[in-house]
Image 1 (tube, rainbow, N blue to C red):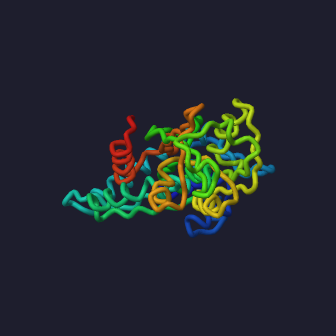
Image 2 (cartoon, rainbow, N blue to C red):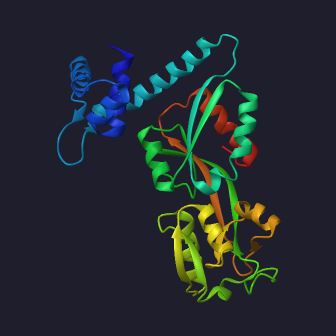
Image 3 (cartoon, helix red, strand yellow):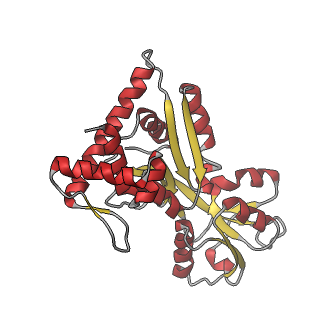
Length: 298
């Protein structure tokens, strides 16, 4: 039995598609089918169910093979990394996906620190919405996801990092700009620049406004924190955002941030990775650094 066949099988389970698996492994779809059939003949068990509107799904036996194969492949990858560099220097690539508000503000100094400590490691960071980060994590396209309000799921491990304070932000010309704090009640009827409805932070803000019986006027919705900030600077409305994301603008005087006086709004930030999938040595080391430096605990 070849290791390549196990990797192909794991990709098939994760993608649910013969076409996508063939693309990932640079082989034909018929070659994917042949490798799966060979595994089924070896174990004398049906490993996947084909057809239907939901693509390919693993059987119970296939799920067992998948979980154990991921552990084997992870250990093999870690061994290969050690053997490539007998001197012990860590090497390899860590694939990370994160939401904009974390990736653009909280993450960069920690990436720089890690690369200084491990110059032979590459870190690939992509920015996306929470649901897409979760999807990429579950499909195995990334090693680590970093999101706000990480949700525990059967197939996901969650590592807590820190809790971020949410604050009200207004333009310097806004009527609230000279205050030291503001109540949610003071936002009644205000033009409001909101996160997109799919963003967990938006849902937390909406719940808080409902608790206080406050209805705001949503003018625009974005999934990108930078666009939200530029809109508030332009006077299109006020917003509620993580405090760390507006420090530069507050310092420059283009935005004013105000703590909320009638409710403490926070959001948890954490790492997610696929349950049962062994992290490579560089990915594990990067996760450990984030936990250590961002104040969380395993």
